Amino acid sequence: MTLRPLALAALSCAFATLARTADLPATAPAKADDVRNRVAGKLAADYPALEKFYTDLHLHPELSLMEEKTSAKVAAELRAAGLEVTEKFGGFGVVGVLKNGAGPTLLIRTDLDGLPVQEETGLPYASQTRVTNLAGQEVSTMQACGHDIHMTVLTGTARMLAAMKDRWSGTLVFIGQPAEEIGVGARAMLTAGLYQKFPKPDYAIALHDSATLPTGTVGTVEGYIMANVDTMDITVRGIGGHGAFPHATKDPIVLAARIIGAFQTIVSRETRPVDPAVITVGSIHGGTKHNIIPNEVKLQLTLRSYSDAVRAHTIEAIRRICRGEAIAAGLPDELMPVITVKDDEFTPATYNDPVLTRRVRGALDRWLGKDNVRTIDPEMGGEDFSEFGRTLDKVPICLFRVGAVDPAKVAESQRTGVALPSLHSSRFAPLPEPTIKTGITALTAAALDLLAKK
Ligand SMILES: [Zn+2]
Ligand SMILES: [Zn+2]
Image 1 (cartoon, rainbow, N blue to C red):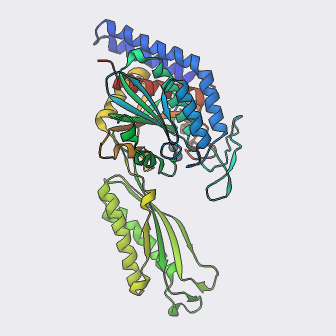
Image 2 (image 1 turned 180 degrees about the vertical axis):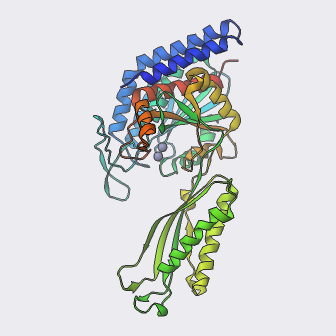
Image 3 (image 1 turned 45 degrees about the vertical axis):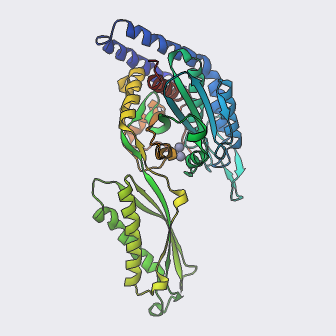
């Protein structure tokens, strides 16, 4: 396990401190260094226990909506840190509250769930776990998105801030959110009354590990960081028959092909070039045999966008094209394609509140050094952390990335052009120690800034 990134971070931290002393009162840097030394000291002392916790979570991943043991482990850690903990809130959600006098309320979130992936990292603590999923199938599970890193960072940050109550004032709400990977857990916790039954946050922050950033670094971006995610099913209907008598049929396979071709113009010709959108047909199934024209073809789509307007336009355009192409194929009204937008699987775009994000970034710059805080590109992936900012309360939210990759591997990938294993890959192997330490330092820095004593 390399300590190089942390050493680098410490170095740039030292430089950042030197650079700042010029424009701060003489006492300020010494005070800031005191706090950082305290955090670094506690982190070093806590790390062996944190690594044990991480390894246990990594070995035993649970799937979305099945995070019973994982949530109990997170709850136990938060309780041990001295928080008032509620379990099984909105499914297997965990809420830990730490009150410390007057001041704002800050929500910090981790997700809990693993994925149905067979781990192929070759790590000594690689998951061998197999579970029966909710559909009754036996599958391998892996923390392939690094939510075990997030849980360890969250509980480590809770320990840190509970031990530093003299340095902040306000209320902390730590949450363990289930079912992120299927985009329903945040909504379940909010619907259960997260903002009514517990202190309502003035800010909500979260981090997610990155499979491209080196350990020791973090990445932020203001505004949109993750996309609207819509899931859509389309049944293209036709009139089946013998493959040798196509003139007596309305072939849904040809029609489905035309429809998919026409979809390509929604983004390229109908959407403003500066507005991101993605339409992917990820699955197409129709027919049973070489010489039979089937009655229907089924398509499964994922749609991505940032703005509500682009989202609405994309869905409307898909409906229009499906109907238009079916009419062009000569199908009667009762055989128009059937389109289902799965509203219960919708994940809204994650919008990083610019004011909050600038403030968090300022704290990260000071604590990690500017060279270790990168401006990252927004992505078209989805993340239901967005939900915490989408209630009527309009809580400002900020999600940032923490680098999880061995810097030597990042350099090698840049040299060879061979891509690193992505999140969700069976070979995604974050480097635990520097990633966890950087994550805890980053969340602690953000919390101490947002809940600074007046
Ligand atoms: Zn994921
Ligand atoms: Zn994730």
